[in-house]
Image: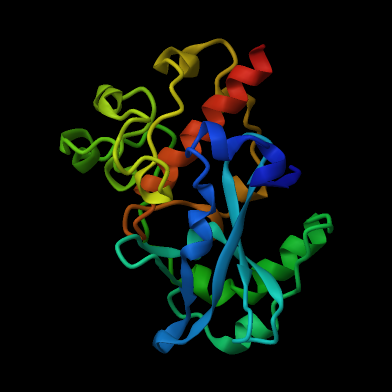
Length: 236
């Protein structure tokens, strides 16, 4: 399944999704084992259905200034401190990761090389409970601050109705409100789940699966909004 940079997949996402503040993802620093900083998040790659697959990491002055891909499931998010941790990651792994550039095609061979680099890290996630498409965290349902992306339920949950673009912190990646489409968009004939064909990304949950343990609840919530956008456009 082809992969796309977020801005290519949804060109006006800054205006529609986050009030022009989607570049907040670039404020997240990436840390390896031992607290070594290895770069900063630069972008996200999504598949045809709007599922997140990779973080694009700019290693800057820390590791030769190369850009690499990190399977999204391996990232552990600290939203309070805008940090991303990768358990067990070493600088050597990053140094030997295949380089990524914006104009390249991420094909099966390239992805296999990426997974080879992170194989040990993925094995460490074998005990995770991965979030499925119907995941709704109890914490999200009961929290009154629905506009905060860290505490926002997936589309279709009634609690999300209180989050609007008028929220005082709307636009921050961590506090993004809903797109504004009705929850019924997910129940139409062409739902994201019916469009989404099984792929290596679905099979390799240790690399791409989102888990509550790694603080991926908000990422899943955001992903569902992208999938809903894709579904509506497909129907139209």
